[in-house]
Image (cartoon, rainbow, N blue to C red; front, side):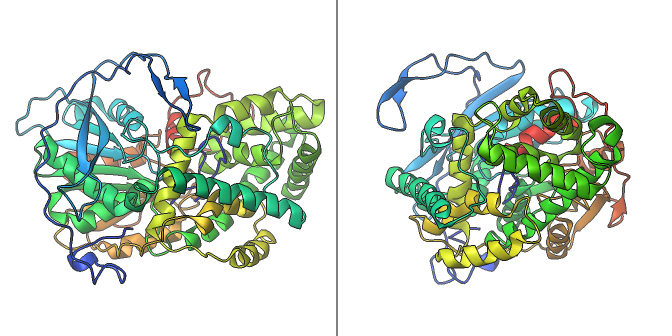
Length: 549
C-alpha cells in the first residue's frame, strides 16, 4: 500500500505473511516444509543510553564513504538496547541480525499493580516504533502509563536495527519533481517502468542475502524473541495500520503469549497485498472527494468553488498546471499527490492543504505548497529506508502480478472511477512486479478462543485501512470486540477522541471490552480558519505523522 514516507506520500498499511509457518497457520506453500527449529534462548536485554554514536565514516549507498549524522541527545526517561534475532528461524543457530528496541519504564514497581510490557507498532511495513513508544507513553493517562513498560522496536531492516535496508540515494532517485505518475503515453510509461525495475534491481543486487527473510511472519517471531529476552511470560500489544496485521500474525503464532491485544485501523488479512491496494484506491478517492466537499462548503474562505464538482475541477486543473510548471521548481503533480494524500489520513491537515492550494491558485503564491511538501512529503534517508523495507516485506509476503499488462489493465480500469490514488499507488508498488526474490504465500491469520479479549478500534470511512477489511479481521478472532467512529481518520486512539480513549484505557487496565460494534462520535470537522499548531505536532496531528511515515 502506498504510504506517506516523504517520497510518494500515500496510503499503506500504514498499509500493507510469511514464508515459514507451523501448525494451524501453515499456508499452502509452507505446509510441506519443516516447522522452524526451536531457537536457543536470546541473551537478556542490556539497557543503556539512546544517544546516537559519534560521527564516523560509514559506507554510502553507492559504495563511497560519507560522514554519519552528528550525535543526538537521548530523550529523558528512555532506554535503548538491541536484541539479536535469527536471520532464518529455520536455522536458529545460524546468522543473526540486530533489532533495535527502546523502553519507557513505568514508575510503578513490579508487583501486582504493574501491568507488564506494552509493545507498540505504527505500521508500514517499514516504520520505526521507537518514537511511537514515547508518544504512547506520554498520551496514555499518567496512572495507566505508570503501570506499563512501553516497548518500541524497529523491525528487522528498519531504522536503528542492523543492518538497515537502503537501496538508493534518495536525493538522486527521488529528486523533485519526479515524473508524473499518470503517464500520458507509452514513452512516459516506459520511463516509469524503468524506475521501478531499477529500484528492484538495486535492492536485489545489494541485499540478496537479506531480502528472503524480510517477512511479516519473521517480524512476528522477532517480537517473541524480544519478549523472551525481556524475561516476560506474556506481553500486551498495540498496533496501528499494518501493525494490526503484524499483531494478528503474532496472535496466530503465539496466542499463549498475549495478555492484551489492541488493533487500531485494521488491515484485511485476506487481501494482502495487490488486492488490498486496489481496494485502498477507491477508499482514498472517496476520502479525497470528502475533502473537496469540505473545501466547497468553505468557499467563502478558500474561493475554490462552491460545489464539490467545482472544487474537483480546480484541484485537477492545478495538478495539470504543475505538470508543465512545478511550483518553486519542485512541486509537480507527483509531489502534489504525495502532499494531499496526507489529507486521507487525517482531516486535521485539511485547512493547511486548502490554504496552500488557495494561495497558489488565487495569488500565484507557491510558499504554502512548498512548505507542505517539505513538511509532509520530502524524502530523506529515513523515508527511503522505510520504503525499501515496505517493498521488501510486501513483495515477499504475497504474490504480485509479474506481467505488467495485468497491472496496466487493472489500473486503467480503476483510474476511470478513482483517479486520485490509482496510478500513484500503482507506481509506488510497481517494483514488486520485478522483485528479485520469489513471493511467498500469505500467512493464514486465525484467532482462537484461547486468546484474551481483543479490542479493535476503527473509523468507518478510513481510507488507508477500509472498514470492510476490519470487519473481515473481526470475524477471524472470536474474542474480538470492535469500537467504531463514523469519521475517516486513520489511527483513532490516543489522538483526542475521549470516547475511544476511554475504552482503550479500560481495556488496558483490566481487559474489559464493550459490546461489539459500540459506536463513538467522531471528532468535529476542522474549521476553515483553523491553524495548524505552531509546531504541527499536537494531538492527532503528531500521531498522523507517525502512522503515515
